[in-house]
Structures are given as C-alpha cells and as structure tokens.
Image (cartoon, rainbow, N blue to C red; front, side, top):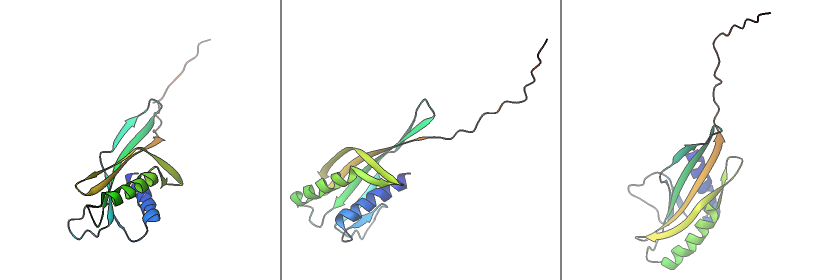
Length: 138
C-alpha cells in the first residue's frame, strides 16, 4: 500500500512539474540530478477498529532539491504547488486525500509533508466449531 501512495505522489509530481525533474524514492548516494524530488516515508503505523477494520497511516516527506538552494522565493512557489498536489493523489481506482499538509525549508531543501490514511476491513477466517451433538428430550 505504501508503494501505491508513492506511485500516486510520483504521478502527481510528474504531471505538475514535467519530465525536467527527476523523482527519487530510493536513497541516492551520489549523482543527484537537481532540480529533483525525493519521496520518503517517515513512520507508517496501523491501528485497529472494533468492527475488524484497519487504518493504515502513512506520513510522507516530499523533498525538493533546487538548482539554487539560496532561492527561497522559488522554493516557496514550488512549496505551494507541492502542497496543492499532495491534497489529492491518484490511488487505486480513485483518489486519496492528504492530511496535515505543510511545508518548510531546511538547509536549502524544501520539505512538503502530508499524511495519508487508508481504511479497510480485514478478512478474517471464520472460526468453526468442532462437532456439536444436540439431543432433544420429549
């Protein structure tokens, strides 16, 4: 499911910014082509609902590495666009809404944050009883 969310964010970034920006999801030790984006999952979690439902929570950090890390004005323009596209991403057959959208610049890198929650029912195997014998008196 995390990969589907990353795919949705990647498709949205590609649609908004075009092919001139590399989009990474794996660590790049050297050879980073700027300007580019890096999509990272922060700390996913899972919670359980009383009805057997499950809620998976996936917080993301979309990092933007500009060609000029001193151009704060340009980074804030990119920040607005990134926040707008993180609000609703393609997911499966539909769309998924991001929550907690925010951005900040740290050490010349723009960070766009969003959290996605996916709710679903987990299939449980039916518990079967062993043999039951009933005698009715009459």
